[in-house]
Length: 92
Image (cartoon, rainbow, N blue to C red):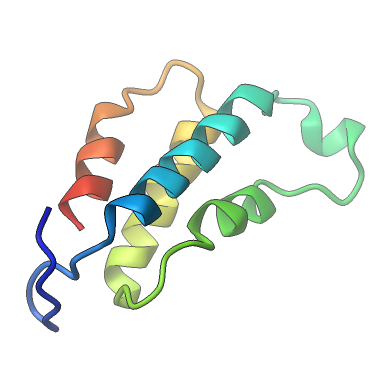
């Protein structure tokens, strides 16, 4: 994994951080169900997304927004293709 940090290239995400994000996304995806916001008042998928990205620091906003979208999709859609999300995560 690349460990070089630049403003226009890979940020050098530490593997332990990538693993933590992947673990958290898996937990959220396994525990999410369509009626969760109704059955758990106050719950939003954004709180899960926030928890998933918490281990990440130093990521530019564009990459973070793309990652958040991928996480949201991986959690909410049980049929989603997750390989793209994983590839995006490990290329950071």
